[in-house]
Image (cartoon, rainbow, N blue to C red; front, side):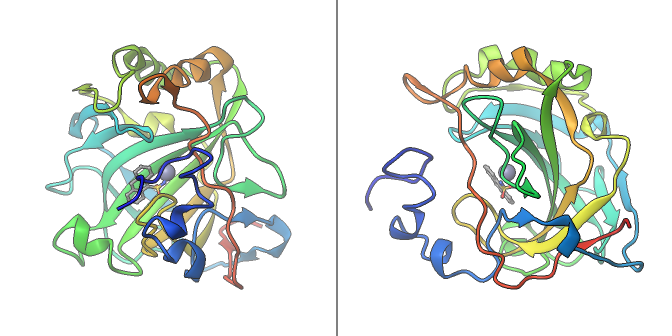
Length: 259
Ligand SMILES: NS(=O)(=O)c1c2ccccc2cc2ccccc12
Ligand SMILES: [Zn+2]
């Protein structure tokens, strides 16, 4: 089976459909998308997001070869997301990042034509309805991912614990303990959001994600972001531009819980 997928000129997003993931081209609810705020419909029935994260549920942080990822204990309802458009309780499983080679781009979602320097994803799965994560991957309401845009300005204190761990995560597969991390400390104060039905933004690109894109970005310092770019996809390959560009909306409805 040819070369594995990545973000390079030969195995990047434009090639994923020929590397074993036809859904990349044929899917009807692929992510990310461009969000045009004026076309998003205010829905008064959308509830606020309700996050209850237990900081002691964080386990480890690793270089997955495509991103840096913090893993949480999702065997019980220790860190859960409810509310918003969601039915049931979604357990926090992991968080990870996407970023660019420079500060002008790197986000996956694009807001009214504006790209951001990066994007944080908090991945949750519907543990009330499905017995395990891999089962949720096959369901249209299996996962909920909160997307937070990163804008370069002042340094972000909540990010510093992650930034400090990056130096020992340079190589693909590197992993280290990451205890007592408060995921909610990474979130902006305002949790207003856009929501739409989408997919994983990386292969296997399963169309199982309810996306919750927060309107308010969080800050990241230029030198904090520079540290992310010191990670490697593989030997001598700096990890950067690990984002998929916006995909066709294919007449999906985007809703928002703010006017
Ligand atoms: N970018 S992403 O959030 O779609 C994503 C996942 C989403 C849902 C479930 C698992 C995922 C695993 C990912 C692993 C690396 C990068 C993005 C990932
Ligand atoms: Zn992601």
